[in-house]
Every structure is written in structure tokens, then in C-alpha cells.
Length: 261
Image (cartoon, one colour):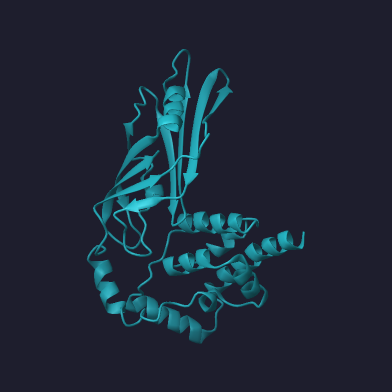
């Protein structure tokens, strides 16, 4: 019981101090330093609020705690470096830091070469993101025994496919960079299996530890294209192509192929 309470306290307190560390209430000296680093081109890009929420929630779940505090954590700008560092910390480390009131930038200090590499980083960003691949494949394994849900709603059958698994990216993008596939849910092509006449609604999230794919379609009358598609996707795998996927703090857009097997 004490372990569970400690884990819950970890997430609430750790994320609370993280949000505070990025707020406008910091002392003037700290604020000036942060502003100077940012304007000179920090080597760590900011992540989107949606990506922050997803990664924060995954860490909270892993630590056995609640996720509502992620809203405060992601209310202010959070860098890729901060998010990755937080994910790598053990639950015990974060609990101790939270109880001590330690700020996030003290728990996850910027890399020592951030300032020295700022010029190169700024140049790379303005040129559209050097080193970002034009095409990348995200692969993952569908959990054994997974089956989509089919729900009868007023005579219509709604089929729901929702899989989350550990991703493998090829080629591997630069450290700290991930394609923002959540922004490409309207630019999706189903490669296999065939979806027939099923009109699908997609949802995607991707962080360093998990790729999540949601697909939903509705069948009416005798039509069963959506039910058949989601069943085949769960049993045989599914391949999707996402076009014009953006990257954080870059004008580069890539084609992302998602392969679930």
C-alpha cells in the first residue's frame, strides 16, 4: 500500500514541479538564461503539447500513478530533451526529486554542449531540419490474442481497432526527433489489407516508447467491410502510409509507413 501511494505521489508531484519549472514565475536570472539559450538556438527542440501529454501519460502509467497532472506539466513549453530525460528517470528518482521540490531543469540538466552547438543547431533548423529522412518506417508487433471490438449502435456496427506497442524506426532519425504522425490522420492510405468500401477514421500517437494506432469504421445494413478489415488487420497485420508528416521545429515533411504485424 505504501508503495502504491508513493508511486501516485511521484506522478502528481514530479509533474507538478515540472510544470512549475517551465512557468513564468521563475526568478529573473533563470528566465534571462532560458531566454538567451532559446534565442541562440538550443540544441533541443520543443515538443508539441499533444506529444507531451502522450509521453507524460505513458510515464505516469508506468509508475502506477494518475495522469491528470500531465495537463499542468504540458501547459508550458517542454523540450524534447526534458521529455526524454523524464522518461528515462526511475520512479524512485522522480519521487525523491519531487519531494525535495527540485526543478525539472535541475533533474534533467541540458547537455553540456548545448551552448557550443547552438550555432549549428540554429542553422540546421532554419534550413529545414538537417538529417531528417524523407521517408521513415515505423514497425511494431500487434499483441498476441488482440481482437478488435464490434459494437452494435442503433442497427449500425461500429468496428474499433486500437493497438499500442513498442516502435522500431527505420532509418533511425536524429536523436530526440520523431515524426508528428498525430498531425497526419487525414492523409492516410491503407496499403493492406483492403478496406473495401469502409470509411475509416484514424488516430495516431508516437513517442520513444510507444506507437498507438486507432482505426474506426461503421457498417450499415448487410455491409461488413469495416468489420472484415479490422479483423484482418488484427490477424494478419496492417500497413498504412501517411503523407506530408511534419517534424517539430522543422519545415521538413516526410512520408511515414506504419507496419503492424
